[in-house]
Image (cartoon, rainbow, N blue to C red; front, side, top):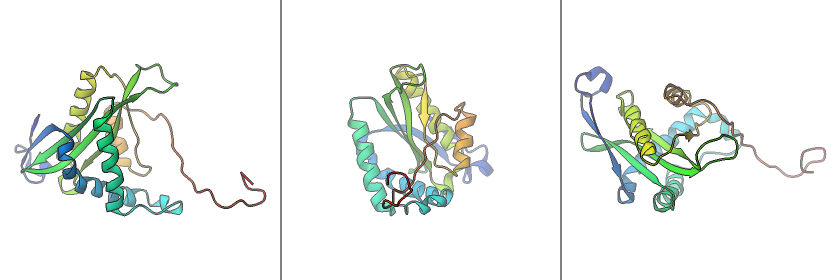
Length: 189
């Protein structure tokens, strides 16, 4: 899939063409700078989380995420990695996988789960995120999947708005907290 940004240089930032392609595990290391930029974005958008725990350092975070991504791609259920390339450089990615459906909604046996979508800050607002989502939707249709879930970091309102424009609606809210030492009168004491 190719995106032609040359007609709208103000929107694309550089008038470059972007190519969206499905990639395998052999290209995983090209995702590292994108994940690290996403980790930085999460830290700036959701600074309130440091009241519970500091954010992991970028290298440590990537090592964990890389291992997870490789497990997803090698797993029994389908998974797909899409790369957005601009001027020969990876500028964005999305990783989607099929997961067993939960008990609440009457869906198929599996649903798609968008693990991550990231576009380098310098390449945002050029349509790469939307093009990656279009690729994700297309592969989910190929898999026969009719529902998708995505977790959005609290405070990342631009991401939430993008997903809402794609037709997603709020489903659950995850909360996080620290379990401290037992104190009389506190839960678990």
